[in-house]
Length: 165
Image 1 (spheres, rainbow, N blue to C red):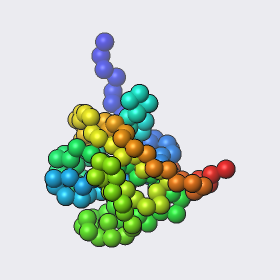
Image 2 (image 1 turned 30 degrees about the vertical axis):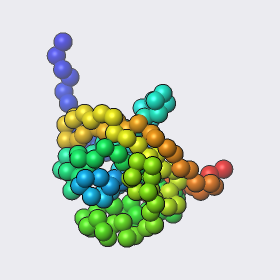
Image 3 (image 1 turned 90 degrees about the horizontal axis):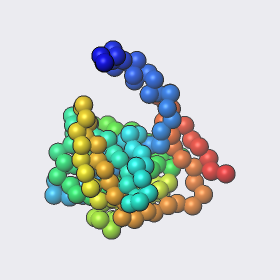
Image 4 (image 1 turned 45 degrees about the horizontal axis):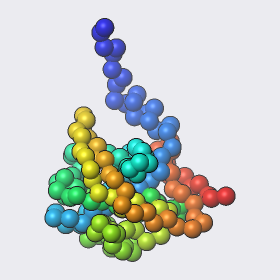
């Protein structure tokens, strides 16, 4: 059976913009130093063992640092933290990125964002390369969740706030 024609890149990107996604800052502090980036390509894989996947572009400025690390923290942004998404998604150096917020250290040693909606402290259990990205499978070691705060989501190429009930 022949492969059907592939959808072009812009059509795919336009279609993906219609999927609402949580906004996350993924952080590490390992052999390559402290680093972080903004990601919406994060999702649950399974709950036994509790595992997330994180997609990381191999052309990202943080790629080498994350390729050397064994742990990371997925910090899901609360509704008032859209500025941090821009900072960690931009070209500023790591010191400037981390100076924009308050941080603690997770069990694994990864930086945890104070005020995040939820933070998943993880050990990287597997890496798979697909196209332009590496997929990091991350086993969750601990979770820290905030109380009654809303979530920041990205939809239709813009930030939106979801309030908790």
